[in-house]
Figure 1 (cartoon, one colour):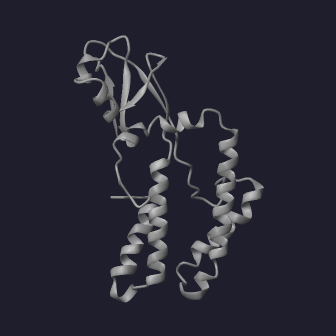
Figure 2 (cartoon, rainbow, N blue to C red):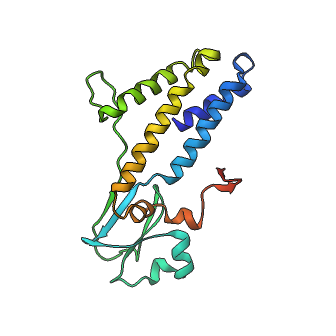
Length: 200
């Protein structure tokens, strides 16, 4: 949905027949907010090599500790070096034997497709989710009808913030678990930080 709002912001700002400054700003706000959230999403929880838990350093982090780490890492102390969800390396790289490694990752939430698909939602969230669905549906209407649904969006945001706070209070070692796959971003951010916002 983040890319969708970014694309709609471009259309609403640049298309002569579809220019709408209010909905353009709305889409840009959602796009920037979604981009910021994506940088914080946990995806990697744990890595094992040969059934032994190993460290998951970032590329920038290990480059400052070991020069030529790809070759010089002690074979009895393997590590998985992570640069993002699509860039990983094993140090040292096995060349003479087969090494099994397992990565525990966070799966994407299932997206319901059929009317009979199950949605994992507690009863206290039904009103918030239905209100948010109504808000999204009114985007096409635009104008005052769309503006009138903003309290529904605020209600949904408050509900999500409350549930996240509850999960955070119940989680053990949350910061350590959530930081494993994102350690490289702390030393080498993918986006430049300007005025408190992540920008490309």
